Length: 74
Figure 1 (cartoon, rainbow, N blue to C red):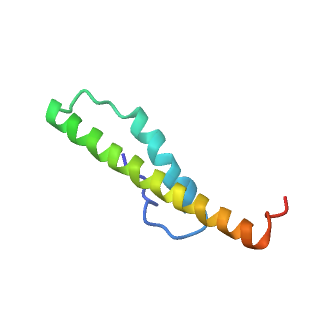
Figure 2 (cartoon, rainbow, N blue to C red):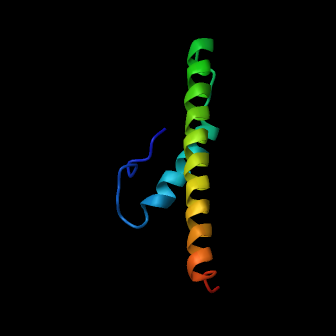
Figure 3 (cartoon, helix red, strand yellow):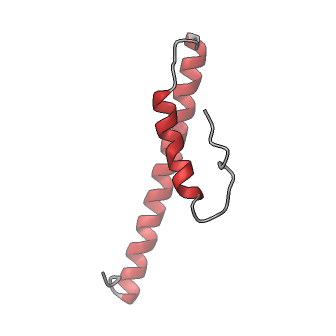
């Protein structure tokens, strides 16, 4: 189940994309074959790896910036 705002670049679009994971968790899997389920798992694992790599790059970038400029004031 995809949200109609998936490709939206407006400021509120991030919340819409975050809702996709919740939508996936509510979707019935009864209609999927074993092969389709295996493909879905592979796609989700690839997405997890992509998000994890992006998070790690962002963390390294932030640490480098903090080392150069000091921590961001809270």
